[in-house]
Image (cartoon, rainbow, N blue to C red):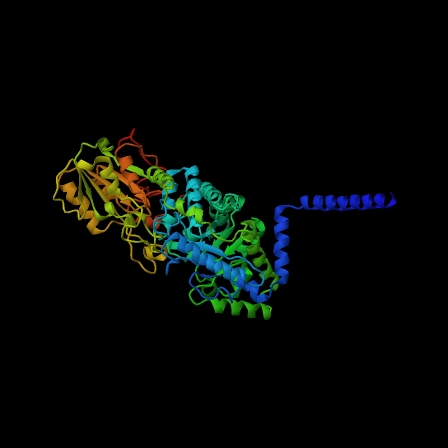
Length: 600
């Protein structure tokens, strides 16, 4: 009996200890547990291993096993494979190499999925963000982001470099279409929705880590030149440009990418006041600050780490320079190891939050979702709701199936031309790609017996109406700047596209113009010669959605996300939504857009 009592006492004490420990665990938040795990790992890591976690390289780099790498980026260049399963297998192979190292830390796989998983042919490609800005549909932004996350995970990624939440102040900038609007309010609402859609709870197998970019002032550079000085003062930056980032942080965004531009003549990659003091300390951002392309060699080497950069795209020859240079900077006391630890802690915490330590491999079960009919229907809805009707003289629209309709121009039957940059390739493609429908496909679906296609705009055909599709060829980043380094583009239509309109206007055939562009262009004369004019932006893979609206199956809903200049001279007076020279009136104001109940 004595022994039984002693035994019972021991059991009672063990239960008490267990309950006490359990209560202590329950009192610790999930974030605190994750931080403890990250700190435990950091305490065991060498300086080289820590710097490795701060390193992102391209997917064909051979240094995964011996450089302790933290992340892989896929962008322009060799493909990981031909099929989605081959992509997954390639990334699984890399992941196994990473997990075979001492601390078994999984890799991040990141991709520029800026309007769908646009690097994979056959994926659902949404309208670029300017189209979503025109739609005004916050729920649709979130749905598109959710689908992008699913199709990105299906091809092996768990980090996307999206959304771009820049606020463009000048259409000369070649990235206007990547942003939602010149309006701070619209951009803020859509930034939040996009982050929520991409990330979900982060732990779900269909979620990805989002990236708010490019911090900050990228769309407000002088003369709209990529990477130039942004001359707004800090008060204007805080009031006009920061609200979308506040919304993204409130939505739990996992990463922020720094910008190519300068503010106060300081590179944003090295701007400690804005990165550490403002973004991290004042705004409470706890995620990863990542550089843009070759950020280490281009913008100040170890100074960018001191400014608050956590992960570096050490690409195209930067790998050894970054890793060796940062190690020496720490050894020479130019960078404190506590700064390195902070960067690695942020990276590891996001990997824990995403559950990569438990489930690091892609799921083949998601592959069937890529480019699915369900996903494409959401993209088609986005196309329909993004269209902005600028003119509809005498209600020439909607078109009627019994009309003899001439569809004009090479843009009408080419999914690459209608999708813009960041589609299959970095600079886009001028060829149709797998799984997409063209604008002409939609017309044939609506009125197959009465459609004539005049690809070259020669005007040999007669009809009741000519639908002329014109626009800008695909471009991305500074290649699209007008007056910038490349200066390959203009803010007017080409002479060839002007001739399409002139040819049918001069024949006396009513003209409907559909403009495919990543920004407002100077088309005042072309609008005057047209009976109807539609701004269709860059619709992506579901071009047939345009015909559904032009034939009246759906009404126009889009409103201008940018005020529309009247002439080239207007760009000298336009800096942003509230910076118009008071003597200059836009051709169309921000928020303008007709529907079928209005004729103009």
